[in-house]
Structures are given as structure tokens and as C-alpha cells.
Length: 212
Image 1 (tube, rainbow, N blue to C red):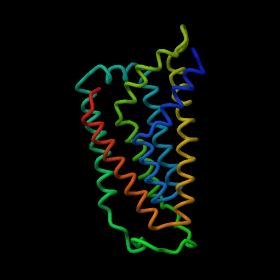
Image 2: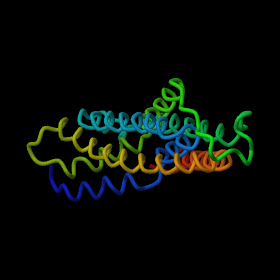
Image 3: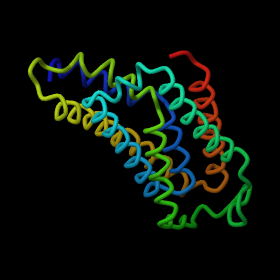
Image 4: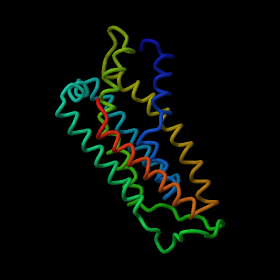
């Protein structure tokens, strides 16, 4: 790989820049805890690896270059983000989630398997339906590809570096939110859900309206 420090700096910047993946992790961690957030992070990471592989095979370049394909993927991603965001904003607390108060000492229940699967799917869909990942891999990866290097292994290795950064950063966020959730739920849980819902709606609108 050419200029490893340069690529690490780019990967760190991409990870730390708030985006839909950050908002989703925030929401899942606030509602269901760190185990569900971990499932969401795994889904998002798998999507990043898929885009890395597609970049090596040339598919990402086709998506980035074809306006119809790009717009279709962008539309799907925007609808997905808006749907989750609006649902979060409109969702009413269940009977065991009063609007305020609550017992700080009560430990939140562990997420069920359906919750874990849903968190994983949302992370995966969010990543796969993000055309900006296709553009990113097409624009950035060739700059760090050494002459004569095998494209697919190198692309997957670079995608794995981004995944590693994502896991560390998003995992830290999920752990922090989960600890706050245990001590201050349910009022703080609802506030985090509203915040993440607002962010998801904003990201969905931006994805649908901003130029390439």
C-alpha cells in the first residue's frame, strides 16, 4: 500500500465525521444497549467491506459514473434514513418507558434476537444504500494503491482498516450511551432517540437533495 500514514489519516477522518452510521449507533445504543449497537456496527462494517470488494471489481466505479444508478441508490438510502428517523420521532414510549422519572437502579433488559437481527440489518442496509461509499472508494482507493499490487486483497485490506476504526469509534460511543442509559433511563433514552431521529432525517434530506 502506498503512503500508509496518509491512508490512516483519511480513514480516521472518514470515521470521525458524523454521518448516518453514527446516528444509527446512537439510536440503537440508547434504545437497546451495547449488544444491539454491536450488531448494528457489524452490519455497517459488512457493508463497508462489500463496497471495498465492489471497488476492486469495478462495480463501485460504475455506480459512481452512472447517474441513474447513483440516483436510484441515493433515493433508496434517503428513503431508508427518513423512514427510520421519522419513526423514531413519532414513536410513543411503551408502557414500561414512562416519559420521565424511572428507577435508575433497574437494569435494562437484554435485547432479544429479533432486536439484534433488526439492528444488524439496519446497519447493513444503511451502508449498502449509501452511494457516497461508492464514490469514496473510487476516488480515494486508487491514490493509495501501489503499482503492481493485487487490487482485490489491497482494497479489502484498506476497507478492513476503515472497519477497524469504525468498530473502535462506534463501539466507544455505544458503550458511553449504554452506561448513561443504565443510570438515567428512561428520560435520557427518549432524548437520545429524538436526537438520533432528527439526525437521521437531516442526513436523509441531505442525501436526497445535495449534488454529487
